[in-house]
Length: 173
Image (cartoon, rainbow, N blue to C red; front, side):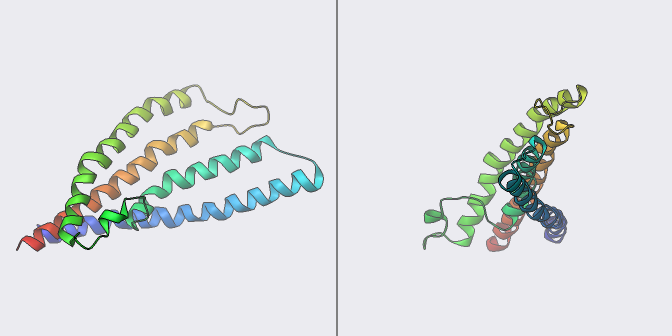
C-alpha cells in the first residue's frame, strides 16, 4: 500500500512544484508591468487603466495559483509556537496535518471550488470584461483561476495528508 501512496504523493507534488515554478515567473512580469506603469505615470503623466488592472490580475494569479506550492514547501501561516515545540513529536505533527487537512483544508477547498463554478460560468456566459473604460476584457479568465487554484491546493492538501498517513503507518510498526 505505501509504495503506491508514495508514488501518488510524488506525482501530486510534481504538479505543485511545476505550477509553483511556472507561477513564479508572474512575479517578474508583475514587477516589469509596475515599473513601466509607474514610469509612465510619474515621468510622462500618462496612465493606463488596463495596466493597473493587469497588475491586480497578476497579483491575484500569484496567490491563487501559488498556494499549492506554498503548502508543499510548508510556507503557510500556522501557530508554530505549538507545532514546533519540544513536546510535538513527528507523529503528533502528522496527526495535526492529517486531521487539519481532512477537517479544515479539504472541506474549505471543496466549498470554494463548488461555489466558484457558477460564478465563473456566469462571467463566461456574459463575456464579462472590465467595467472601467480602457480596462481589460475577458475578466472570466481571471475568475476561472479561483477553482483552478483551489483545485491545485486541494490536490497538494491530499498529498500532504497522504504523507502524514504514511508517516503514521510507519511509526506504528
